[in-house]
Image (cartoon, rainbow, N blue to C red; front, side, top):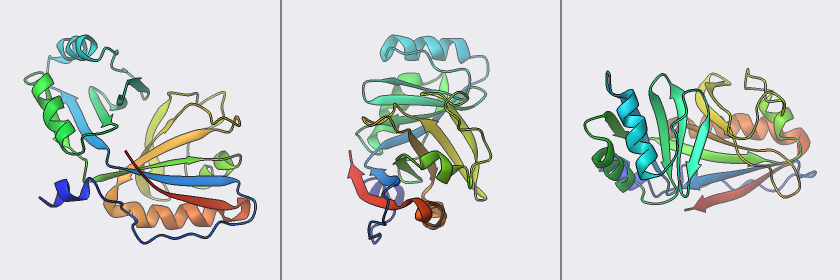
Length: 204
């Protein structure tokens, strides 16, 4: 029951960062998401891809990348392994996904186990470069690209969203809820020189 209760709650309910001069970086927590991991069972990869294509319809990525159909997205996080997100539904999303793909894949609910942050602003790449050991240059990491990596010793999956209205880059970062406080402290410290704005928790 603990996980289902957490899925609709902020991971950082007491954060109240005062806007810093400069406003070069923003961070928002997305909560209320339905989150699940999906892994194809042995020999069922082709059938699973066809099942997903017929239902959503999208083609599951075969590399670290994100694809989206309406309010549902799938991000490649390993061979035959994806992180699935739904804009709504919370922990109920994993049940509907499991019903769709059984017996082709295994699905595990992560709605209460993961947290997703959306980060952006003109200095976001400079901020992320202080902790992410990957190339986030726009020529190397395009919209829809993703990577499962570490940030300041914290395991994380990051993907690039479409750019903001002002042309600045936007990323989303998924990590274990239990590590959200550590990530928050690293991010705020890394963004301090550019001015960090906490935009609160965005409920879906």
